[in-house]
Length: 373
Ligand code: ADP
Image 1 (cartoon, rainbow, N blue to C red):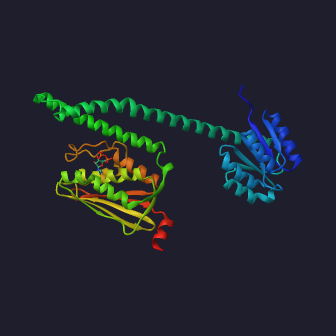
Image 2 (cartoon, rainbow, N blue to C red; image 1 turned 180 degrees about the horizontal axis):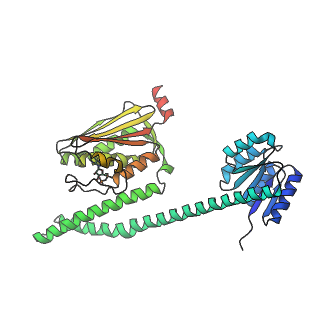
Image 3 (cartoon, rainbow, N blue to C red; image 1 turned 180 degrees about the vertical axis):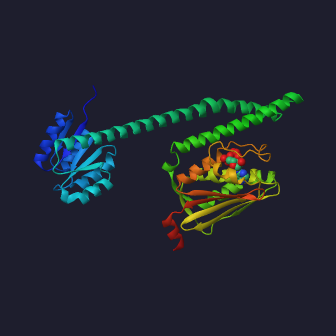
């Protein structure tokens, strides 16, 4: 049989403490009592109870203060506040501050048992949710490790061999075999891109980004993206232009992830462009946010496909896109990173005219004020 649930009653009224202990012990719970907030908080740390019955009106640390402390350190303990009719407003306050429910005085043993049972059911659900979340995170981490090491590493080795053969470093290969090896080489490239994108997505989903935000100057990100992709643009005959923001724009961001966002958007704008087209990256301030347009003069996206382009693995299928390699994960990664920064992304497109992706990112208000002073 599993251990009985532990309940702590914190109340300065002896009669309430004694009657609760009697009723709850009889119902099979391991019930403890504390005479005030200080003793209560000490017992919370010592016993780690499943549920707390907490009087709101106590001398010294009152119920609301004790509740605030408990919520900070023990988020899964269910707290029920005990209150007189006169203090119903503070009971509502307590609910807003994380209490599960309130029990008005006087109450019958039946009312006490009912509310405690409901509270413990809530506790069970919270525990189950936490266990499932931990299990999911463990599986995800395991899968990331398998893909990164067991799948990606051997494929990289094969790619290195093919780089040498296709690059002519191993001498002449006959034409038919050469063609087959080139095909294998580009298929392998596509597969490695897919694995790289999938790993990025998995790491974002595992919360690797939002836990690591730092103060970042936005300008450096765009300059680097444009520098890194100028070669790709030139090889397609596309002109790449950057209009940086005026002054210094400071963001709370994960710089590496924002680099991924704008590399994806600019690389798409080049990939889906016409040979003599242009890509413009324009930055400006809008209502405390940084607005970044990535505008191209390319093939555009059909209106009926627009609602789906941020979904995992979605690619527009048409005679114009069939030869363009891609994984269909780029925009999904972009959206998740932007939203992980508290921002948003919009898209406008006209077939055969071009597409504009607009990203909004919240600016650091304090840094902005310093800049203006
Ligand atoms: P992919 O790896 O296929 O480029 P993305 O998730 O980055 O995947 O984009 C999803 C789809 O949206 C692309 O396959 C393409 O059809 C369309 N798309 C994205 N960006 C553009 C763009 N700038 N112009 C036209 N189509 C685009």
